[in-house]
Length: 455
Image (cartoon, rainbow, N blue to C red; front, top):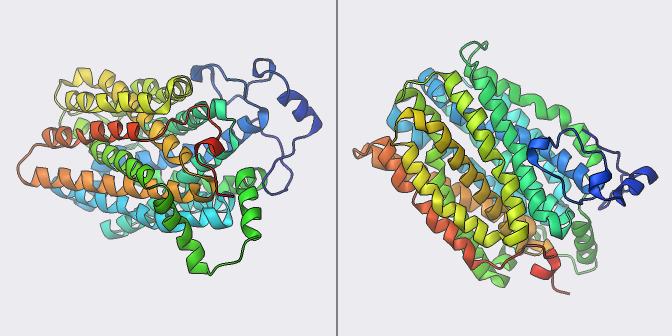
């Protein structure tokens, strides 16, 4: 990546004179980083420092999505290896997703010790728990390791959005968040590509998890190049001037203040994140299992669909970010969320030849809505509570996902077919998307104008 060395001063990056000269020029005249491929569209007039930060965070996002894709793609192989019945799969996956609950207990620390250190620690933990999953001998070991993995992934992804929101220029913050999602989504494509070879890889699905160790080799680069955010540095300096409080009180204070100062925003984020996640999770979790067991697809066929049709949906991150900067986060998010249940029903009920285009629209709706939910859930709270707010959103999304999988499992155990159960639960996505309209609009506003810390 075209990444420049940053000086080790907390809260800021000081580029070299040549870098400052390039940053003062319009973006069209600067050299485009190789990793911002032309398929992602034009790059707005964003300074080199912000682009560099986006590239660094995207490294973690890429491997997050790669690791997450394994459970979706290889579920039928994992189930066969551990001898799991179809009716128990949703329950086990739901338990794995509950592993993100500890992340909510840890993320408030980002509002006390900073975003940078916790983010880098989460990336390291993500790599270690992924590779350890490759060596699980029982389903219980696999579930525990994947629960720990979920904790680290939620920490990493939440803090990535917080760092980007606090450092990116207001007029292009939507593009930055959308681009982070798009770059991260390429990890899904990489995972799908490798899954197509799962029957040829040594040790099968376990090899996919072993490859997840690679983020550990990027940790030194992230430590060297990612600074603490300037907004948190100012907040920490102001907090240091106040009377100190006990450790427990310091940890609980952001949580209590979040609910006390912004009750309606907390309610709206809870509904949007929880309900949308509940409706979406089963649609994607069982798509690989469904195409292989019901339509008789081979792994390579599923991989081709994810790679080619999914590329269209991946670009939804960038499109959604640009539309959100132009027309607002709320209407864009609500519109795409409302259409998700219809595409989900079609995917699970039409002949197999229609699945690739429907997959493209499902992915487009999913990534676009998640960009809007994550952006609003991060932007509508002040710096002193932004990490905690991100943790709360991650928690409700986790609980929503577990509840959605639980509802799907119960429906199947009572005689519903998998397609009918998944389609019915997907209706919750529309309600969650409509809940975004309860939040204030944040497009093109500085974060302090949306929710500033008290003097």
